[in-house]
Image (cartoon, rainbow, N blue to C red; front, side):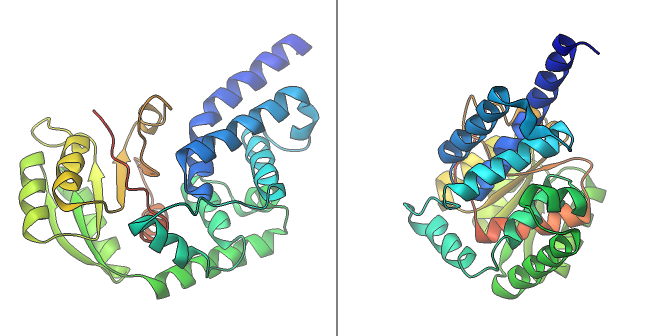
Length: 269
């Protein structure tokens, strides 16, 4: 492979990784703006010196660069918040160092423990232990009520089972925008799990905007088969986004994260 073709290949892989890099950066920093700045700095560092990717794949490498830049900056988290976000960050401050980031990398971003270790700069055994610690500490700290907006019955039942087993109460399952408004108003949830495309071709995004407009801010996790369509940087984005097909581990992690470190920003359809 020539230098030019290798450079093109790396650029393409960086482009493919960018939506997920931005998702991780936002979850780490608690702010879309701050997360995007760290993601941009990571890409600039790689474009300036490709050797920072040495020894690992491009995706693992760019996440490693991001983590190092964020850590070297003092691992900042946006604390200029109020309400739900401020409460979430107070919870987060009690977690063991690096445990939340390890959990995000493993369960949401799909890195194996070896890759997590490479990104954070620890051993594989330490990475595994950090994920265990994060799960235990989060499960012990927060529980609440969850509404599910999902038109596929099997998926809805699966999500309900997972959330219930975590110790949360499910307020109801909605298949359409209208049902979501009815259920959400009758029993106000602490958090919402929402599909994007609903049974009557209505939008889960619209349903969420309806509910937040009526009930006030609360954490939301979107579930979609096409996450890259929502992680474009062109409009408000969800901090918590699960790709279909999902795993139980991803749902558990996202629900725990959302209870701790939630974004209350809505999407505009």
